[in-house]
View 1 (cartoon, helix red, strand yellow):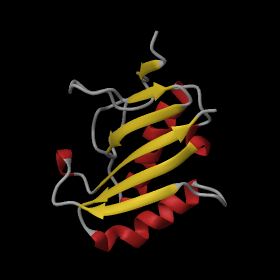
View 2 (cartoon, one colour; view 1 turned 30 degrees about the vertical axis):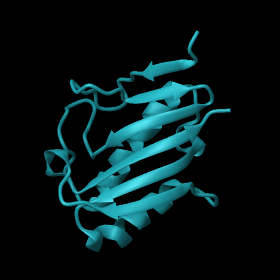
View 3 (cartoon, one colour; view 1 turned 180 degrees about the vertical axis):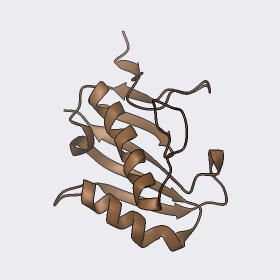
View 4 (cartoon, rainbow, N blue to C red; view 1 turned 60 degrees about the horizontal axis):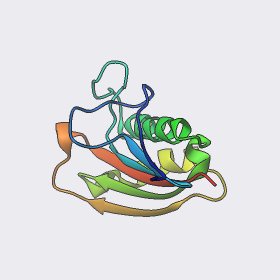
Amino acid sequence: MSDIDSIETDGAPSTDNPYSQGVRAGDTCYVSGYGPVDPDTGEVVAGDIEAQTDRVLDNIAAVVADAGGDGLADVVKVTVYLTDLADYERVNAAYGARFGEEPPARVCVEVSRLPEDVRVELDAIAYLG
């Protein structure tokens, strides 16, 4: 019997693409990449890069919570994808406000384009043990 479960939650955008919102494998939750999409409307949220980063983090927190975790408090690794590294400091400010004294490990890369032409996307790994 496998200890791997697909995570599906209404708290994060759903997809008709061939991947899960997240996958729980034992005590680890792997969260798919999310852009700043509101799960209720399916639309990219309006606002600046900070507001969009907050929406992405809300989406990640919802998947981790549905997997049995404590939202962002259980996140141990994040990858940030930006279409413009000029947004780096502003994303850092929004990101830092959401993680406490011990933020997760992180990678940030600039990419040429993201789905729906959003400016920021994040994926995450959470430890639920």
